[in-house]
Length: 542
Image 1 (tube, rainbow, N blue to C red):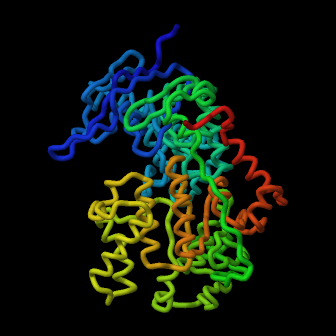
Image 2: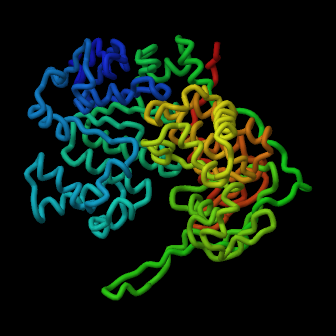
Image 3: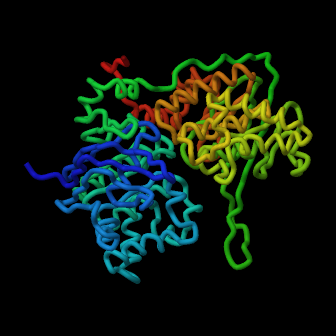
């Protein structure tokens, strides 16, 4: 038998916090053979990403250390290599795709500059040769008209396109091992399927091995040969994918496989008052060209959308990346300009100035997709949640503010004693609970939930869905729930809007749309989503 390409033996990772030391990874071992895909799965904080970053020594040393272990690549020990030597391996023989391309790509450099930089450092390519290789790479990862995209900046690309650029950069030097850290987490199901297919095709063409990190079990079954299940820094189970999925041995693996959003959304009360309604709502962004910046066209992000949401209802909005879902939510909240009437509790919001909108802000709140990006790292959790009370209830007594903050934390299932800690001290699921607490502390009527579960693992997803349903029932909240995860939408939404290219292509009761979609696009969307799901027959949670 050929020796493994990568061997991780008895690896531990510890982080120092002053006098205290935390063990993030505890004596794990696995290997990867040439051309093989090994998946690392587990919930947030289990040690998956820390393991991956240890392999290429990207942890914040000296705060991070390795109390034990060895990482060998092609027979060479990596942990003891000095920084100068590890750079020849990192980016050349081993490359990585990070979870969030928007924060991984440099916002000040064009796509061409960022790809060419890698080619210059590792291949010595410059000028026309580097540019030609950059165009070739963008074409390989499926970006249309790649030459025209070279001058684009990251913010000018969609989420799927940014992830494709990250893949192009990772494959620029044809590595032997690709580490993919949650590469499809924030992508919609159609783009997700495209990225997975692309990775498999490129892997077959280049013969490279892959370490695939994810919390999505459907993806693991689709892409991996073997799987390692991590929990609390340890690998609790590993083996061939089919064997682990059909006959899981560890209780945690069984719980992970059984975890999914459950329950039924509340039925729509046809007599309930309409909380929010739009009529032919439009958000068009001008395309300007030339020295005089003349408008030559428009990007129709939202193009004539009419919806209504009743008291206590959850309206689900689904569609692929760039369909206009988030733009619709922002336009409804008057966070971006739009054309067309927006009615909230019978009041017209269209045309109101900033100060005129402030009284409505108490009753209209939003929970953003990325809690880490939306929570200020310089503010404690108490300050984050309390900020809205300072703005909208400036005369409220300090004791009452504290009571409201504590009540909100209790509502979202967090210990109020942790309110003086900072966002970075919490896991992804806990940060999302903090974001929900910030939204509900003002006791709003209407909440826009913009992909609140997309970056969370399956166990935490199910908890957040239960939490949102419970809060809605107790507070009689109305939700506009934006998501690409159809299982989550099915568990929460009583009616559903399907969007494509800024337009509504299907609208109706969620149960009916899921059972018999009328639009060809909706059928294709559902097919892409459910092809990624795992069959759970034979998996019994014990």
